[in-house]
Image: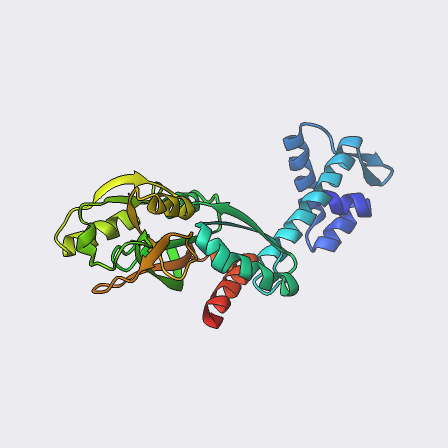
Length: 284
């Protein structure tokens, strides 16, 4: 009402504009003045005019109403997506899914930005629970399935077969041949260790876990130097001297997922990113 009064200069005209009574306008302006702790209007003949404090507050009202309009437009599911989507994910998913999705977004939704944080699943899901990110790219294994919270919305993206990473010069041998070897597992997540222990149990041994490493490239280096063996993705280019051999009965798959808080995909920028991610998955 203060903004309308600054424009029209008459409480009667403001009342007519807003389809209310002059008394209601007067009471609303008086209540606002009490909250502000200073007079906002002063007499000007038969009309009123804003005091300097009233003009200043009216200027703030312009900014506030513009922000509200922008927020409504931003949240309107039919509007053009505009905004920054915060994504936490593991390196492989960022390379395989998120960067191609960003390339697909650019020509159709140029107003959508991505802010990328590299994290392993436990770290990323913790950020999601605290509303510090909008979307998580995470993984599990078929031998160690993830447990999702009731507030999670989850869509599968792809899966990758994993095998046994060994020195290339090793002769082909069953998994049991490596029962007495040192093993390498992830330092930031326990899922591959859980898979290894399950696989070893099925083959009658307990793995001796000696090294905990996050970087696959460093895992390659340790294997090449015969410091241990590890589960690694097949189809990936490992360093010279490392071979990833297939495992059967059971075959191991790492499964990628996109996770967000249920209902948040009504926000147009997040929905646009999810559409690109799932489109890329279908095309792949």
